[in-house]
View 1 (spheres, helix red, strand yellow):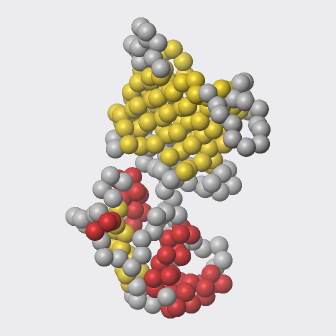
View 2 (view 1 turned 180 degrees about the horizontal axis):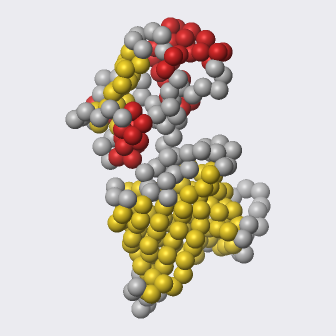
View 3 (view 1 turned 60 degrees about the vertical axis):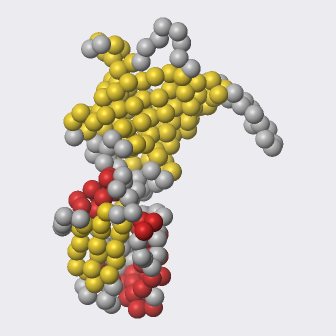
Length: 253
């Protein structure tokens, strides 16, 4: 966790309660604070404390619940709960160090790196068709500007390689500037919607929407394939042709 701790000059304690299934967020806090206890993580900040613990957020007695863990939402929520003292300290420090970051913990920094294996299934399934084995390799998430990571899919029948998509996930000028680089100057804009990485694109007369998310220990990519039509004013019905779903389990971190 990157924190400009000098801005906190008043006593304040902050607790983060993370749903038990959001292990990637908890692990990210653990990695950045580096202080692990049996049921939580904590660190001292000047006269106060930041505590992260696992628990059911619906049963907690708290001053404020923040739906997003983006740095801006987190900053605003903490400052609102702490009222005037922390606001004054924050504004003074921002004047001294305008490029500092209070807390940077992106929900778009998933713990997906490693090797995953599973299968691809097309729906509706054709008679006699079978799932295709998929091996996916994902590198460490790009947290610095103008960097890329491995985003490679290998498709197999048995152990025979049928195709390889040697892509990269790249970050541009900021955390929201993300693309899937397929090579040959093909770059697909992608972005986080909640905890889902969404990549819409067109191919010939098709509109495709790819959604990748972690469901428990299953990494799932689902591509909805739609027959495209020219834009009109108002509502336009469109035909969904198929859904392609890849479900993977991690075999190597």
